[in-house]
Amino acid sequence: MLSARPVPSNSPSKMKTIYFVRHGESESNINGLISGAEDDVRLTPSGIAQAKKTGQDLKDKNIQLIVCSPMIRALETARCIAKEIGFKPEQIVTTALFIERSYGIYSGRPSDKFRNDYASGKVHKSVETEEQMYHRFKRALAWLSRLKEDRIVVVSHGGASRAIRVIKNDLHHSEMYKLDSFGNAEIYEFNL
Image (cartoon, rainbow, N blue to C red):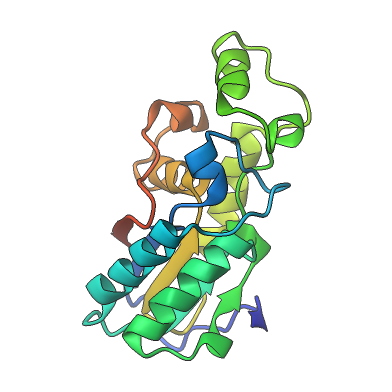
C-alpha cells in the first residue's frame, strides 16, 4: 500500500466526485461490540460479499483512486472493491485521517455501554470527542481536495460517515450522533 501523501491538483477548481464507502460487515458488527481505532477486526464472509457487491456497483464510475483507512476491515473492503473495478490493490492509498473514531476504553466492549454513557453525558475521557473528529475529517476532506484525481473511492468507517455528512451539510459537530450510521458497504456520493 502507498502511504498518504497529497499530490497537488493540476486543475485549481475542478469538482471531484467522492464515493465514500463504509467497510463491510465485521466480526465486531455481528457481535454487537464497539470497534474503534483501537480494535482492528476482519470482515465476515458476509462483509466480503457486501464489499464485492459495492465494487460491482462502482464498476462503471471511472474510479481513478481508492483511498482507505489503514484498519484491516477497511483494507479488506478496499481490496474487494479494487478487484471488482479492475484497480490495482497495491495502488490503494492508506491514510490515518480516515481511521475510525477512537473509542478508548469502550473498544472491543458491548456497544450498549458506550450508548448508555453517551446518553447520560458520562463518556470516558479516553474517547475522541466529536469536535476532534470533526476537525480531523475537515483535514481529511481538505487533503482529498488537493489530490489530482477527480473520481475517488474512500473506504472508511461508520463514525467517519457521520462526521463527513455533518461537514457536508454544514451542521455543528454536536449533531454528529443524531445522524444514523451507514449500513455496511453502503455508498455515499458527494462532490468536493
